[in-house]
Length: 194
Image (cartoon, rainbow, N blue to C red; front, side, top):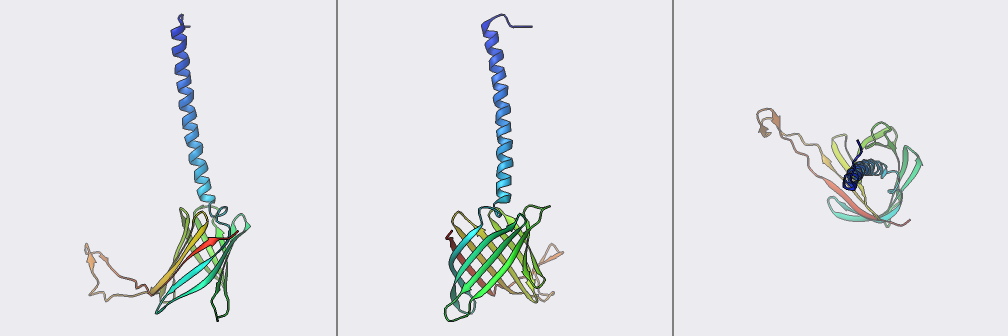
């Protein structure tokens, strides 16, 4: 049944425009969410690449510092080369040349291959790659966070301490609390140069 008045036609047109605007709005939100999710997931592979330089502070028994160059370059769609070069005065240059592998099934999971069979799982949270692992009786954890024109790196670790089970605090009679001692910290801010 067709409306007979121009007001009825205007009302139908307004309802139609409202529905189209609503559909357009929902589609735009969906696209925005999908694209932003894709960009965040691909952020490591795209905007993180480049050369960075800065100073790494070393906190151990004493405080020291070393100049560092960090290079992140794409090998292929699933692999990124990670080279960190430590250049301390009066000491030989140290180069850490690793490969970061993306997990094609889980977009936020990575493995850093340090060579010699050492492969450490990493996880991307927002703009940071994080890992946690043990070496012998030592625990270590690293983070690499990338911002617009800088990278922030931290490596921390220490001995795995076991508390005497009789002296360990108990929570709800089923969980015991143990601690890990922070034995060292390496912390640096590196600025993008290319």
